Length: 157
Image (cartoon, rainbow, N blue to C red; front, side, top):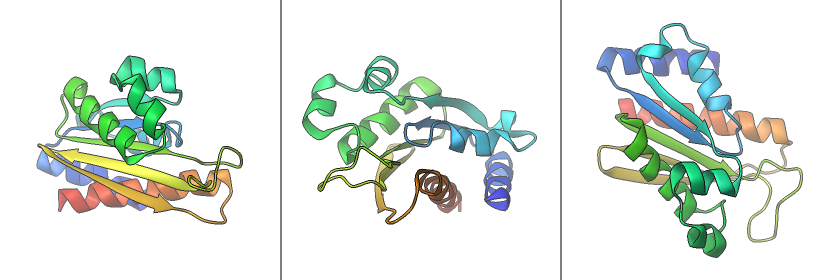
């Protein structure tokens, strides 16, 4: 992962692109991966850890009925997260992460390891759905951060 975050920051700098992140189940790990690279302050605008439903509502203005109807771990919530972040962050690329890292909290329809990663560049939003099976909490979080970094790299190329 170390080289992935270096590549992301280098490419963001080269292209003069600003990045903002809203994360839930990763608890700031993606923001930490970016800010661990020297010079990231030139490209990293904001990192929000909106772990609770209340913070998603208060900071990212996600309507309570969206969370009530679809859940915090849903493509709908992830979409609102990335879109509303773009309104407050003044960044070229925004990314959102929501999921169930476990070991508890999973259901049949939303098992542990279910993660949504949203990316927004200009007016285009893409929501990616992943299911990281048979992994512990730490592995799910690390795998999610790795995926997010890969998605940022892809969108920059």
